[in-house]
Amino acid sequence: MSTPAVHPVEIPAVLARPPPVVRTKDVQGMPGTSLGLVFRVFQFVFAAISLSIMASTNDFPSVTAFCYLVAAVSLQSLWSLALAVVDIYALLVKRSLRNTSVVSLFAIGDGITSTLTFAAACASAGITVLIGNDLDKCDVNHCKRFMSATAMAFLSWVAVSPSFFLNFWSLASR
Amino acid sequence: MSTPAVHPVEIPAVLARPPPVVRTKDVQGMPGTSLGLVFRVFQFVFAAISLSIMASTNDFPSVTAFCYLVAAVSLQSLWSLALAVVDIYALLVKRSLRNTSVVSLFAIGDGITSTLTFAAACASAGITVLIGNDLDKCDVNHCKRFMSATAMAFLSWVAVSPSFFLNFWSLASR
Image 1 (cartoon, chains in turn orange, green):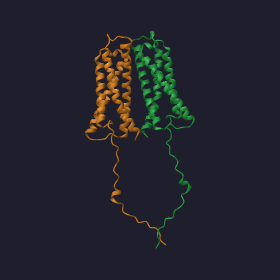
Image 2 (cartoon, chains in turn cyan, red):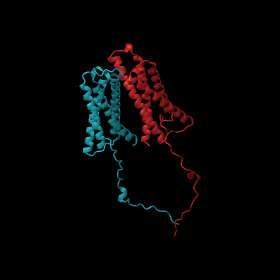
Image 3 (cartoon, chains in turn yellow, red):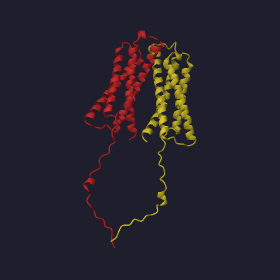
Image 4 (cartoon, chains in turn yellow, green):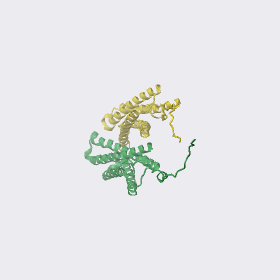
């Protein structure tokens, strides 16, 4: 009668090594990628142009919405500049920024600044259209500058949206 | 000397049955859940109140932003009413609405209507603040009605946001 026997064997060296870490490739446009840096630069440039055009009019403090636009695009330009610096650092040292807490911080910050910028742009657009089309008082107001500042704020918002959605998407899909 | 032998055995009935389909539980607030229906009802009610308050003022057509608010909350109320009906149907027949194309349709629709409602609310808020605080002309305008309509539009947007983010999240995490 035979009995089954278990012979302990040496683990081959190949199996003893930990398996290589499988890393999903960084999607272009995420923080720490060159397209992400391009988005940040566009956000900063548009917000800064909007800020300087609006600040160059002497009568913007008389309208609350224009003051709010100045505040919102200032915040947007500071945030985008800071993240552009982080992106440049990550690109220079070839470091990936795919860390849950970092990505969620970026997503929340992008969500807040983009909402503020969009709200300010909409409020300014409403007032610019009121002055220009409804009241027809462009002769005594800087309509063109108000329009340019509003348009630049909208463009800045358009440039923030992909950053926000990519961060949010990568948070949800991990 | 003994040789190993393989004796074919009958597969027990328990193993022959296909394994039960593992289904992730519907997150409350998603389409087809009772909390999702509550969100839809709130969206519809706030948008409808905003629409009726704004339409009750006789001078809203003279301001472009107020006309835009009327259009945006009309669209929002129709969209939310339609999805509320879909939710009621799904709850009655106990059907899950976790289908990629359905969820992406809902997410895109929610994204568009919520952006339009938010933009309209911001533009109206800018003009209401301009009339009330900056120009101090509340005696000749329906400031209170404009404010209420704007506030209701904002509340409608607040009620759409969770629907949009839950749909977007469930799209990304599948």
